[in-house]
Amino acid sequence: MLNSRYLLYNKKLIAPLIINKSVKGGVKINLYKRWILIFVLLLLVSGCAEKPSSNPCVDGPIIRAEMEADFSNWYNSWNYDYELVLAARLIPGGFGGIYRSESNYNNIVMVLVDIGKSSQAVSTLNEALNCKALFSGEIDFDEIEIAKGQFNFTQLFQWKEKAGIAFSDDAAQSLDADEFRNRVVIGVVEEGAIDRVRQLVINAGVPPGALVVELESLMMEHM
Image 1 (spheres, one colour):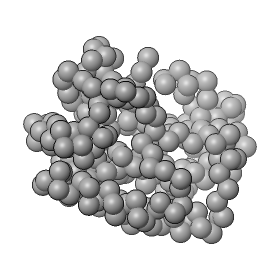
Image 2: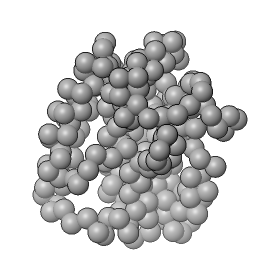
Image 3: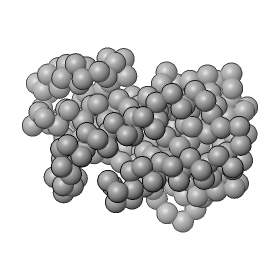
Image 4: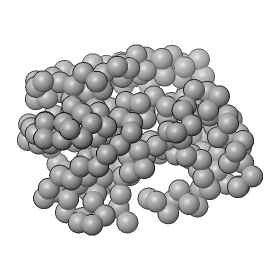
């Protein structure tokens, strides 16, 4: 099943940044620099989702350039999480992500906190895609469905950064900002570690209601 983690574009499959230990081990970032990076990224995204752009075709490239300039020296390339953060800054209604519809693969589902702004959000997304301000304009779909979410993607992104502390526990294996479940999801290798890792992440500032800690095998089944 193709859901929140994979969006089929016209010509390619783009996956968001799901952090796991194999990836983490291959990225050598000085701890001091990493915390500076997190601070800069949180400044960039804080409060932005509630102030969507009035013209995504004009503002989108400007905001993208600002974001890229601030962290291009830290990571090798723009990834799917950043694209969703940008979308949250452009689309009204508390954009929480998009994923393929389970009932109709040709449709996409857009998650909104305020579904009362569905028409405006759909119009903005279509406009942004037409001018290639989001996702390079390459998402292929028939219709846009709307799903109610509790959290916008800016919040999920911020909490995912805080949840990185989970990797201080050897049982934690993966970390994702999951649009389908509208939660920060952590995969662990043993059931006995679930409560321990969950409390560790809650203590770091992630709200309990926004967090799922589960066995890695179950997390992979949702992909």
